[in-house]
Amino acid sequence: MVQWVQGRVVGKTVWTERLVSLQVDAEIAPFEAGQFLKLGLEIGAETVGRPYSLINAQDERPLEFCFSVVPDGPLSGRLAALNAGDAVFVAPHASGFLTLGEIPDGRHLWLIASGTGIGPFLSILKTTEPWQRFERIVLVQAARLTSELMYRHTISQFAEAHAGQFAFVPLVSREATDFAIPGRIPQAIENGQLEARAGIEFDAADSQVMLCGNPQMLKETQQLLIERGLKKNRRRDPGNVSVESYW
Image 1 (tube, helix red, strand yellow):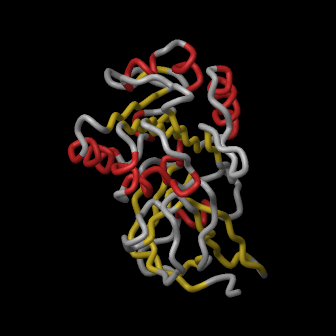
Image 2 (cartoon, rainbow, N blue to C red; image 1 turned 30 degrees about the vertical axis):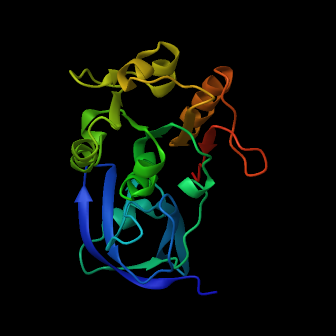
């Protein structure tokens, strides 16, 4: 199997000093919304690669990825320095199980993200499947600062196209805002603010929850949901909470 294909950067969005999106032209195999690909660069005598979620839906081009710049990391800073026309290696085959094909049926779909974990959920929401399968969809996006709430225009388009079916709940933990819930996702679940803003509750009979973000958020949120009567979703034992972490 071919490990890499040559890609070319065709655009870049710099959200903040530490958050960047790259648009990349590359020929890859078909993928499912919610999956991720590796990007790579030659560094010294080797090709260094890391997995990044695809933001685009299956039929959208160019490919799009968002990532955090890791201080002293070997790859992310170099990726962030790329500009249109620069070459980048792309793994031709996507991976990952945070897809709707792995999710049991339910009435309500919760997509809960922190940081760049928003990526796979944007890819999923750009397809028709979630809007056909679920009565209500809640997208939760948590960030430290308002400037880190990426893709707000894209999210507003979901809200306009699916009024009454879609709810967007932002959280900002390190500055005051007049629109976002203050604090972190686990706190907002514990104090009831998240469900109040969403207009629906977590319920084992109706809810499917997909989580993507930093490991601490995933651990704490999953535990809170299990305490509420939801259970982890596994292929051999279907449940309510689906998690994938690759950093």
